Each structure stands twice: as structure tokens, then as C-alpha cells.
Length: 354
Image (cartoon, rainbow, N blue to C red):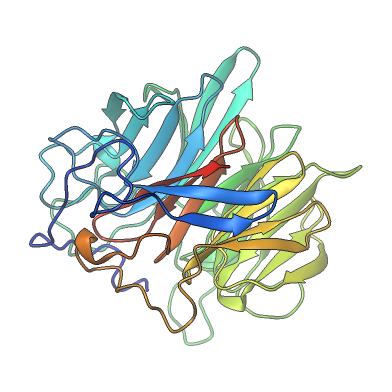
């Protein structure tokens, strides 16, 4: 998937983005899940301005005011290069920014610090063939909700883990995907598309340690794509979406392996609300787990055979009620779920709790 994630299909049809579109025939929005986990799927949520065309929609968060932030790579046909788009709770466009992240926008995290809120962006390394090259790449950025940069961590830490070559003699790569923040402010960055390490820094971005690395044994990772600080128990635990191993892996805050949680299909990231956790599974579904890490629902499952079209197809071919490649998800304050997908024309779905 790494070889195609930054391809842009200039000829792909991009349908108008209208708030609350139910499906192309105008019929009732599909209902997903069951019991306490029942949701109405409102695809193509949000009033996207005409000058912005979604690229791959990668990250989504809600701020304390109920505003929704979507980080996307920007489509090749988009007039605006802004990679961050902000909507109010009703889907009305508020603002956009982030031209410097066009083509490499990826991870997105929000955190309240005192009376202020900050966004943490995890920006991919670029394909050397991309034109134009983005102004920032392979970087972790702390920014205000309006896009002012507070600090950045550029490139990998200057440590032996990255200086030593791979077994075949090739140099270690660095390509960060997502991050998590501990209660004390320490930052854990997943090098999900690089050398599969987790790099830990303090709140001032000073380096602390590196752990993980390529493999499938306990403590090793195979594409640590998403990362989350689980504070539901007596002590915080770091949870990593060990994507290519199709599992979650749990660590202490100093990087020691605890255990695995199985039952996923390429898990991407996390968000938690009232003990429940939403995990977008890249292979065509959104998974919900409870506070005991037991699966309670799979939503919008397009099944392993993939009845939905490929991710580079026009929007009109998407099947209502099914996901293609869920990449990011978050709860809003009302318990609804926003899902963004790794598809070339982007897709934002609001799962309205019913």
C-alpha cells in the first residue's frame, strides 16, 4: 500500500460535497450495527468549499467546541492546497490551512493543555517523485487550532537504532504515522512507515528513548500505524495498532511489552469515549471494543472479499453503508462517530447514534 498511497488520480470524478447526503439516490441513510451500537451512516458529511477537493482523508478529531478537523492529502485537482479543513458541529465550513502538508498529511491528535487546545500533526515522508515537493515532511508538529506552529520534531532521533543499517545493508528509513501523549506530557511517535520503532519524547520535544522495531515477536512491531494512551485503568498503558500483524500490542510507558489484543484487520488508530474504543480497520470495517478490549461491534463491514469498489474508483461507485479503507475515526461529544477513509477522492462519514 505504501507504493500507491500518494498517487493522485486527476481524472477521478469528484461529486459535490453536501451536508447530510444520504446516498446518490436520495433514499434513507443506511443503518449499521445493533443494540446500543446502532448508527445511521451519513456519507460525504460536511459542506466542503468548491475550491477544496479531498485527497486521502487520513485523520479526524473534535475540539471542545464541537468543531471537526479533517487532515487530508489534497486531491491533484484541488484549487486550494490546504490540508486541514475545519467544520462546525453541523458540517458548516469554518476555515482551512496547512498548505505545507499537501501530499503528506497523516496523523492527527488533539489535546487540551490548561485553557488552550493544541493539534499534533504527524506528517509523512514524501515520494521523491511528488511534484511539487511539500514544504514539510517526515515531521511531528504541534500547532494551534488555527495552524500556528508551536514546535516541530524534524526527522528521526540521532540514536544508534537509526544509524545501524538494516540486515541487507540498506539505511534505516523514517516515516512517522501517528502519536500519543501520556498524562505527564510525554509524546510517543509511531514510525509506522519507516523502521517500525516507537520514539518517546518529553513535552518539550526532547528525546527520551526508542523501542519496538521490525518483527512479530513480543515487543516487536510490523507497521505501528496508530498509537493511543489508554488511561481507563489504574495506570496508563500505551497501545499500538500493530497493523501488519493484525493486532494491538500493549506496552508500559517505558516501552516494555505487556500483551497482545487480537481480532483486527489492519487496525489503523484509536479514539476512546466512556470506556469504549473505536478502531478503524483498514480492511473494510470499523471495530468497537469495550473497556475489557472485547469486540462489541463491527460496523460497515465490506468483508474480506471486498464487495465495495477499490479505493481509487469514483465516488459514485461506493456502496452506501459499507466502508472501503477506514483510516481514522473519533467520537464526538454526543457519542456519534466520524470516520475518514484512505480513498483517492476522500470520504467523511458521520455515524449518527440512534
